[in-house]
Length: 328
Image (cartoon, rainbow, N blue to C red; front, side, top):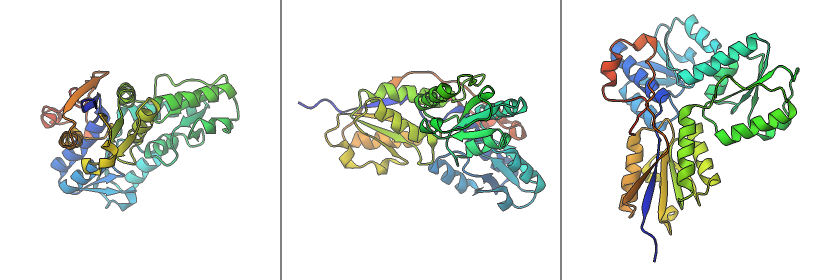
């Protein structure tokens, strides 16, 4: 007799403190300065969030030279290089920096190690906005290492003065494997002063690891350009899920995925509003998966202050929203 159909709902999931701060920053800028407000790149890597903000008057651009002189521009949660900050200043733009404070921490580490003439091995993905921003803080000192395999080929000038930093949204396991391989070649490789992979990325990976071992199928809600969402699919498969897929919206779930399945794990990336997860749960309920069991592995209550340009009335704007989304 087939088992009872159930959903294993991972927690924590969804919005992290840095994403909540960045989204509120755009909303607050629109309220205070009026539309349009320009945003360099996607404020966070989620198509639904971007579309919603466009509907409120945000205009997303690739570079600041697309922004009219003197206009307001928001820098995304992923951070920007000093070259972008300078380009905005040259155009007399009113810049609002919504960079996640945890990304800013990595930027400061890069500046400090470069000042001390260290070579920096930045573990991350070439082309990702966060990596571009961090590397831009010390371009003459940074080499990007994209994978554990690249650890075998990277070259440094002085093996006694080398440190690793990382993109904040990577797979914890893969990052530490890259570090292990780098240290085999460079035994004096230094660690960053504190963990670069953000608390939210780690917490979501820990939760899906626990869910995956009991799941016939894992559904990760998140966009294709969201590094942490893509990693959740990989982690789910690595830790025992029989199948795992990423979707932006509930209507992307295919019936064939559910055939023969009795347990579905559900989670979402750190840039995903919980309304999208609720829609997935509703669709699964219609397919017979009505029992929802929350699998909680951590509590989150972190909140970040809004960018300094927007702090007036910040608490009134937040209302009951928690940047850490404690009970999301």
